[in-house]
Image (cartoon, rainbow, N blue to C red):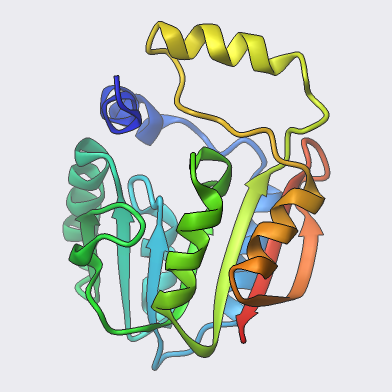
Length: 205
């Protein structure tokens, strides 16, 4: 089973699930918004059902919310239509997919995505190609390197189609992947502090 198939299966349940740490979510949403302007073209990768993209849409010129899951995208499209938000495209696409277009973006977001990428190093280089010089890459990533006991659990769940690929990154590993892709980290923090979930704002060099 592919990861896209897994997310298709859980999409409706995922869409109804509450945010685990609302305070941390709202803080990082506010920090993200502070780097965006009303003239910006923004891309969110791994956008799920586009909940965050829809909140950011009124503050930018246009936002593209992308996800590998057909069902997640369908839900996101429904939500955008129901909300009457028209400066958003919700599309099915992976990192580097031609469906995302060839024009560089002012900012690319990857919120709770990097740890789910089997080739994060390669994908982040593709992301760098999609960001304008001086533009932003903003990410938030659970860093689970210290939780060694999760490895066999996830492996078994994945074998039965109950979990996607998950990479156990440390904060050092994560920041190395981002900087080696061609970004300079200008803001960082753990929100929430446990697992930790590392929030990074990086500028394209």
